[in-house]
Length: 235
Image 1 (tube, rainbow, N blue to C red):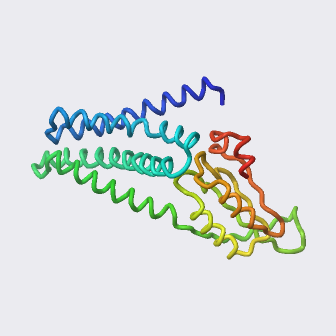
Image 2: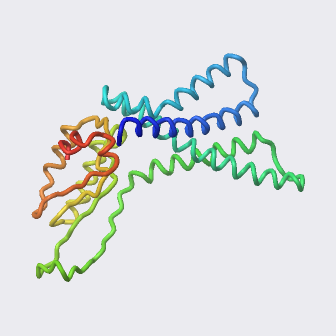
């Protein structure tokens, strides 16, 4: 991707993200009476959250570690919460508008609180579910690749080791892989993101995994964004 294409892409993403934050701001100030200082504080928080993807990228590249990890946790959770809130609020507002025609609707404040509560519950569940490891078993026959024996292959993808998922998560995955007793391990992209807190330890853990037929990986779009040379070195 050229520099111009990257700049255009970032501007489009930040513009869309800005519209989402403006929606949250407008819905909030319409139902809560805020003082002048309250408005300024809210705007300041909104601007920081809007810029959080950019700030996470800078922190991950130049000051990886605890700070970038905490910033990424907050920024990415907020990103999920924002999407869920806007979607839920639009749906509940539409339902409330219909119910208002039968005079059984509720107030905009109740709708906002309900949307915020449901969205928060969704983010909490999503955060928990993201770290639940699932193993699926499939059998496949390959007539053109007949070795006269069965081969057990473990395929992993989209682990996204970075500022939010690190050595602890990697250890759990490796333990689960070892339990499958594979002959071959392959990763089909998005193995890592920039800003890994403990890159040496993460590399050591994966180096200790030695299936008989080896380990292989291909680059995904996140490796491309992180830097191909750096990603190849880590892999």
